[in-house]
Amino acid sequence: MLKKTFFPILAAALLGLVRPAAAEQITVLGVNDIHAALDNMPKLATLVKQERAKDPQALLLSAGDNRTGNPYSDMNPHTGWPVVAIMNRIGFNLSTLGNHSFDTAKDDMRYLVDNAEFRVVCANVEADDKDRILIQPYRIFERKGVTIGVLGLVETGKSGYPSALPENVKDFTFKDPFKVAQEYKWLRERCDVLILLTHLGFEDDVELAKQCPWVDAIVGGHSHTKVDGAHMEGNVMITQAQNKAAYLTRITFDVQDGKVVSKEARLLPTAACEPDADIAKMVQDFMNDPALNEEIAENLRNITVREEMGCLVTDAVREVTGVDIALFNFGGIRLSSHFAGAIRLCDVFRIDPFGTDYVLFKLSAKELHDFIIACALLDHYGAPSASGITYSANLHKGNKMEITDIRLEDGSPLDPNKTYTVAIGRYASSAKFSHKDPGRSLNISGQECLIKFLRKHGKVDYADVHRAHITRDPDVPLY
Image (tube, rainbow, N blue to C red; front, side):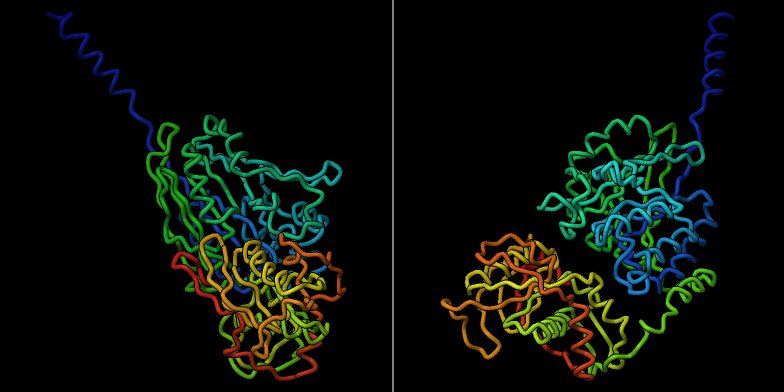
């Protein structure tokens, strides 16, 4: 009788000693597409401090495009340094590359990577050996005994390289991010939590989640999508926090026995936060530039949409260069509104932060028509801004465009037997379309044209000026 009762009691006692490990909660904070929004960085810093007060070991990640969009950062002797310096002070742990990492020469990227106090990860980019830019494919952290792997990826688009000028990417090798992600599936066995830190855009993140169901989360960027909380694609959580440090996504993973047992995400606005005094002082110091703060013209009425701003930019280019028609890709216009009042020099660099030259083409009416369609395909923002013509078009998913009407500014149709001089921004000029004239540089940037135009006219009014009349399908976003 003793033997019959003793062993079951002993087994039960031993089982009671082997209890499942308690779940650890891991916090990851994500932002994307900061675009040097220095004004919002003090509030972001406060929100990060608040979150780290709750979890001091929280990881802070950026999904790329930290730079480009603010003249106080863009015009710094080391382009982009102010935003990286502030990210250092806030305490970022990791960033991936964005397409705007390639807006200037590789020396700028090297300086930023070398002086960042956080690592940069991007598995589908390799710099030439001679450049010695320390970009790693992934990074593994340990928090509370939990291993967290983060793999970086950047978009390569239809061209096979990120959306940037071809000359700025020639010293790098790019691979398809979807294929590269599969090459690192082995990280799943090494990590309790596995995150893809991507600069691909929301739709591509959804596709990536379908192809990589073995990851726990994708912290994404590039499309400036506001994902309220998280989008679940199968068991993969996808987040994105719009842009310009307006939001921070807090992601929590409950990890037990080396596996994520639950996860959730919440989108946190920075607007209500009090600015962090230390970061605000850094921003003030970077923005204390009398030359950039010079008033050069007056805007008579509020400019409220990107199309109105695009008409101002292209009018400036057309007048200064003397061409028949000027065109600029919609995505190149980075300040989509401006209140009535003073226009400062820094505003010019906000409108067009890239400073690239314009290319002169002699195009037939058919070639011009084909370019506008090709430009929309190249630039995910859609139809280009124009001066010298007006046009109407239908814009479908994937930025596929049908032009229904195109006319000169006086309302007359294009002459099929005439050749027109057309100034096109350098990036847009790389669009794939059939044309006889190879084009030549006008050796003047949009910034230079706009400054000359504004100084000459003194007062401008572009409210309600629209030349591209676009009908969008319901699933095509309006920028």
